[in-house]
Length: 501
Image (cartoon, helix red, strand yellow):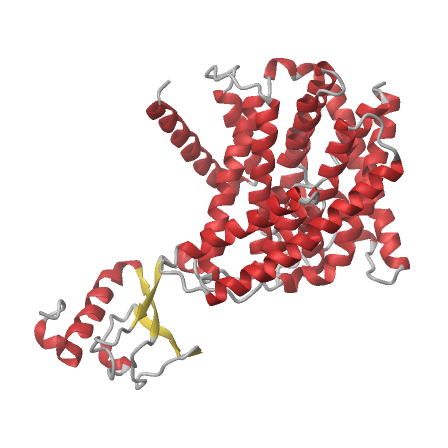
């Protein structure tokens, strides 16, 4: 196929995935399952597109996960998660270790797999998925501490699980001491790089006046990947570095922060679509039947034993340390809300690509993990609101963050216009009431000399003012014509018509 055909196919897949997001939002079905389904549909058992390259899938998957983590850090509200960071850090370290062992031992005994393969399965399944957590839990009215714990955990625990999977997949016989030292070193280096790149990026973006506002979001994502690649180059955890750097930048006063977050969300959605579709292509439906039973068994162990045990152990530790306290209802919800998504499937490509356990055994791990993610995401994701309500944790009256730039305006079918008054404009000296805007439009805010205030009808417009005008979509064109007319002719614009001629 030529390039045009590939572009057409890719565009069709993306459009289908975007429509699927709308369907998933209405039905409560996790969108990742629909993306995986699209990949299976166009794969070898559907349209016949062949893709079986675990090495390439691993590299693309890790880059896509870095993008998703960057978006997660940029859109996470530090004020909501900072109190939950100690518990989340324990869950992302001690909890991961407990989960690996709690999965590996029963899998080794029940499925008769060798201990190394069982540990690889436990490590692959130890990480909760940032994309799944961010997309599902941010729609639930949960207490801030509980939601913050799940968000921070999903952002932190990718790093230690990747380290564990790589060690188990590539080292011949990693000793416990060597493994722990490797984890500590990589996490320390990754954290250091993220904590350096984040503040330096904020400092630079505040002081460098870029000629086009659209360059700021690109610069922020580029800085996030500087943190990722820099940490990897120094032998640290790129995932931890990119998340911390993005978290710092997303919670700092940067130019065009709202636009940056919107751009990051769009790129992250594109990364998710591409990632899940690719993983669907990589899977072989004809090989899945043999993985269903062991996959269901390993998944049941994860959901019913390993995850609850890791929560109980971590809750006990933070309680002993007097850092935090979780009651039984919160522990039960945290146990059920450990969503798995693309991360375990991507991690399952690492042993497959390394082929240390043999091609058949490594491919079996991938197939089992694929089954686990599909089945248990289908069970857990849609039931989270019901579980939260039954446990009395759903807070309908909990204050939710409002994305004024997008969500409320879209619901009102309105637009937000930003108008800057240049020195040559005759808007200067005009009072707000003299604009005579349509009744469905209003000047809601003025930014002047770095200060913001709500104008009155008699407020006079000055040079370099920035006016924020909220208008219905139907009135947008008349409002723009009226503003331009006054800018050209001042208060006499009414005599010269809307165009100010």
